[in-house]
Amino acid sequence: MFTHEMIASFNELETSLYNYISQNSEKVAYMRIRELADHTHVSTATILRFCRKVGCEGFSEFKIKLKMSLEEQKKTVIKSPQHSITEFFERTLKGDLEQTMDEAAAVISKADSVIFIGIGSSGILAEYGARYFSSIGKFSLYIKDPHFPIHANFRENSVTIVLSVSGENPFTVTQLNQLKQEGSTVISITNNKLSTIAKISDLNLSYYVTEEWYQDANITTQVPVVYILESVARKISSNH
Image 1 (cartoon, rainbow, N blue to C red):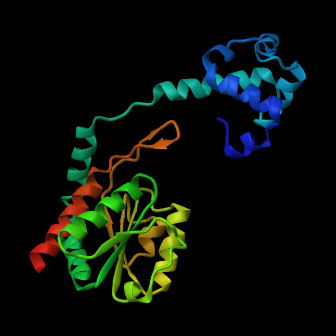
Image 2: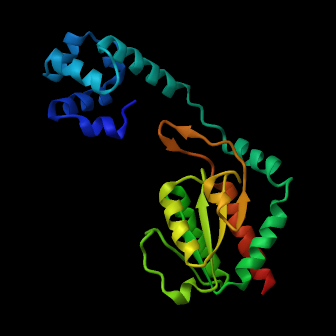
Image 3: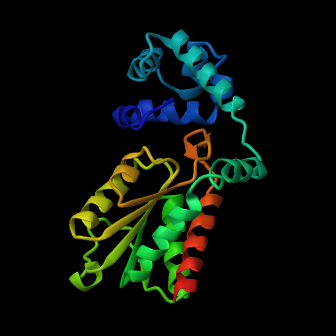
């Protein structure tokens, strides 16, 4: 309900009001404006100014939006892990993923080095991927900083493996553009092949599961990514 821009615009009193509302949303949704003013030790004028800053005409409209936000949070249903994994196997493994993984393994086998990139949970798996690939004898590293200096020896005959659920993360796109311009072959692992990252990659591995969000957090299963990373690594190992 509160965007970064909204929070940044709050003055000291409004920030105090925001903190109280965030911690007592259920109560505030049914308070009168005078009650909220008494609890937060601010004036009703401050509350009305706060409401306008968050896109509401007055306190009544603010409470309506607050109630709607609370109801939306209650509706969130997290699917079982079995459901997500079944979805992956039914949608993806019946397609041409196996063939694409074979292609990826062939490209990576010929490379001198592998660079993994990703942000958030994708970054954690990118780091895992780098370690896993190194374990089977393919020199790999994970780079988080888009401005990290990469020596020409590493860029030459390298493969970049980029991980992104949405395929639209601007931070990852920036990294990818830099490495692509420096001549690295790009293989992406994304949730669908129509994303920006997938489109600008030389080869894309898509796993197609329904994206899941809990409040503002993306909790889409990463099991397919682990499966793809380990499968490709094992194919590389068997090619040696």
